Amino acid sequence: MIDQFQRNIDYLRISITEECNLRCAYCMPLKWQNQNKREIPDKYLTSREIIRLTGLFETLGIKKIKITGGEPLLRKDVSYIIAGLKSISGIRQVTLTTNGIFLEEKAEALKNAGVHGINVSLDTLDEDFYCKLTGGKGNLNQVLKGIQAARRLQIPLKINAVLLKNEKEHWKNLTELLKEGIPVRFIELMPLGLGRKMEGITGEEALAQLKIMYPDLRETKKALGAGPARYFESAGLKAPVGLIDAVTNKFCTGCNRVRLTSQGILKPCLCYDYGVDLKKLLRQGKTDQEILREIKKAVYEKPRGHCFGQSDNITESKMMWQIGG
Image (cartoon, rainbow, N blue to C red; front, top):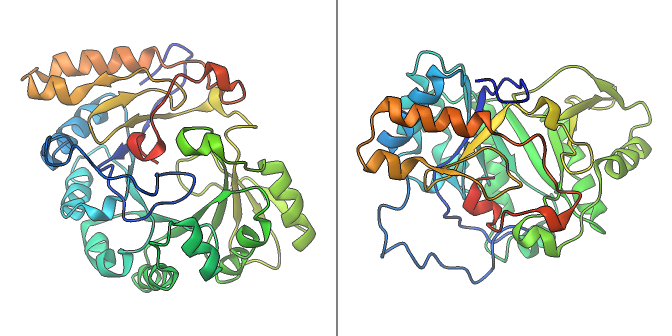
């Protein structure tokens, strides 16, 4: 798909649930409960609807899929969804992002479903800080077991860590995983939802800290996955370190993605509340051609860029777990 600014949109991020077993401080309120779960039992897209919509997106040029949440491994049909997406002829890559708590349990099923790679969200290797950051609901040892289980199955892995101000000793200790050959990407805090109430640091500040630890750190043109990360290598590391500095280093001119929320809203840009309700169209019995017309219109009108640097211009009020991480 080509939008109005001649960008080729070939990457779709699909959230399959808003539910999560953790309460990370920058993401989900500690006391949040899904009030609508009993009232609206069918509020999420079904596996059939996800696969049908992805088939339509594929006809328009989507080639790469990222499964997100919430915590996608909470859905019992996650492996079925991945296998279904893999069966669509033009889909070249299906990956998944998880907090890792259930990864040890699910790794073999994900491997059998054909997942191409897994991103594990992990902000520290310090057990006490991990517990505090996840609202007392996380189990760091379980995450580490999941990472090792995926490695034994030779599933490509990346670690995603949010850059929080005054917590550099916690995110810097993740470089130990780089020494084991596991890529780690440091991500600027998104000014959405609870992220607006917390302070992060910029990618450049993080890079300066990393260069103190690894003075020979140099940028490489090698890419890992479909995302916007910049990667850096050092002779002292067995894997590249990545920076996703989407807030301060806008990559909007080359943005290749759109998002589909768990409730079926197609979002062309994370920053704005505009979206198209594809679930409603599906359940109204609209034809493929009618749905395709709405998808093409929404993607064509994708904004030129985000406005995260001008917080007053951000119109999206939902939190990341509602949109899809």
